[in-house]
Length: 385
Picture (cartoon, rainbow, N blue to C red):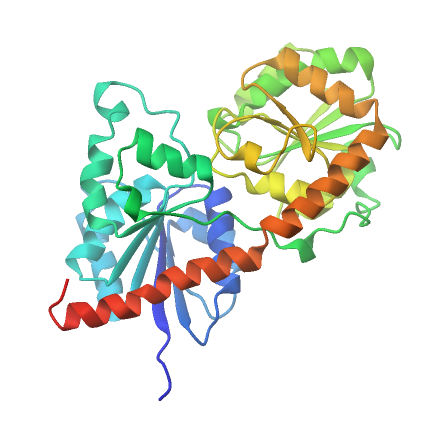
């Protein structure tokens, strides 16, 4: 007898396209359509950004649900879950799960999953830092997918979530998109006003406090003292763009830094770079680091959360403490002056990604968790726990 595909609905109420959305895209592209029928509910802003990259068969539904007063949006999500007979509701980031998971539970969705993605360094104050709301909302979540071992420890040891609900599935990378031998488009360097011999640093990430762009800007004058022609490209959008542009001007960097906004083809920009930089204050498991190594570009990153699981200091890249522009500048100068070390780290990094962090592995393991929904649905129909 032919098996009916499981209906899987992804939910995100983020306002910008970031790493969590790239994670969702990986799953939407890779899921076996003989087993799964995918849907995506996200804000109109993210829907516009993702639509060109979505597979044609994905059911995309723009919906804004970011406040308890948005009762009609909550009702609409409930209708979507019932009408599409959703078997798996998978929310990304806690703020999305906070709204969607209770609705899924009320609609008797057989399996409710949350991928928190990051350690929430912004949690301050007595109530927020104790994660009371997280544990209450967690009553509606069957499983949490931790994107790194560090992320799993944070969920269990810091948030106090049940260890039996936490499953580690590392982010994966599509190695076919990144070729170390691929040159950057010939027009890219002159379009930025860069000379042929100018060393190029690349930072890819949302322009938000988490990502540490200001620390990198503070490090750049020290790098320029040794490499006067060094250039920095900031790829991404976010609320800090104007502040960061003013900060660069104040440091006298306005001729050396380019803010290029979101760009759909990160592989072309990585081909331009000599070194990629990840100066974050916190991460879950950074896709950018995987992609940089897959593209054959060495990485200098902060040693936070899951980052050292992919950027192995001295083996696949260099790591430095977060918020330390002096140490960051030293690491960047070390790689810029030593092309052989850059090549060694990049080659080892690509091999590391190939062995441990493939996209296929991420999709397969996530699908295996979803298939548990079929068994769970049968038990619920029989009135079993």
